[in-house]
Length: 245
Image 1 (spheres, rainbow, N blue to C red):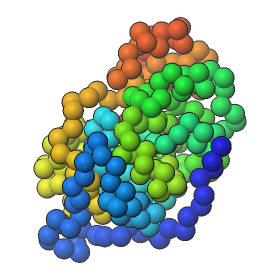
Image 2 (cartoon, rainbow, N blue to C red):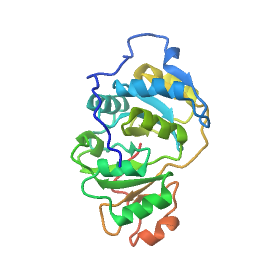
Image 3 (tube, rainbow, N blue to C red):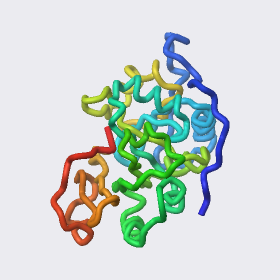
């Protein structure tokens, strides 16, 4: 089990929207299907210094930062106009990192589900550990974790050595942006780096499964169907908590 180390981070992000009117230097073209360590190292250094990053995932482009950098989290809430009560989903690069982020131990049931569906489009909701910033849980005391099926993101998390929050690129309440040219035009002034992998496949959002209840509760059906999860469920899908957007 590899715990996340504490890395000193600045109190603010690297860049500000007023710094320049030309934001092309904040965009790096990257191949989603090839390992490009030099480019990912630049992105990792920005995250370690407290910056905000837009990056491709196996679902949509995500807006993210270190899960442990509270000024970065505040920037995300601010630029999205996101309600403080709305939690932020968190990405890990390997199942062993779950234990460092949740309260209590990883149950046998959780281990079974993780083994079957990770990496992939399933977000699992756990009780949040003490070290998790309250902004991530939105006051709920829980944390939504996912290991994405995207090697680029897994490599990035390993380089940063910290979990990443990742929310859709949009103003709160509006549809998430999928067109990278539109993302660059509208969001480059407000973030420190954009990893441009071009158009992404039109994949569904992740499914959200709450493991804080017994039996687990399906909060949102997405990439993983309710049918595939049926043996873990005994109740109908609910909609009282969302961990994406």
